[in-house]
Picture (cartoon, rainbow, N blue to C red):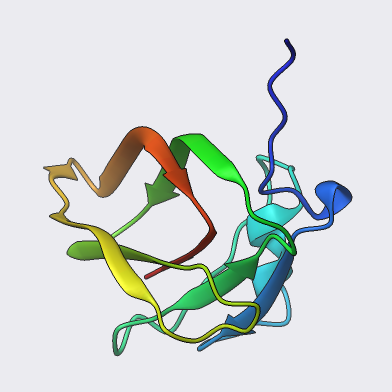
Length: 115
């Protein structure tokens, strides 16, 4: 059975909220599937985004690449609307030279939110 990347706009996924946006690096870059594009933030305060899958999904693997992130928290919601989130994972990231890489795995369901 072929695995599908559910976090792609081509699969109907949307970024429905982002606390920061840059004209050259908008939040939609998070889900465009292009490894050359990215979302950039001001870095001032905790930044967050909400990705909506528009259906319940089972997440078997989640890969996040980030730079200069001290803590990563991912929350999920089973609601039709982006409300009533519950914490799924919170981790302090480790610095590797000038970047932090976090790879999270596990069978979970629903919408994901992180910063």
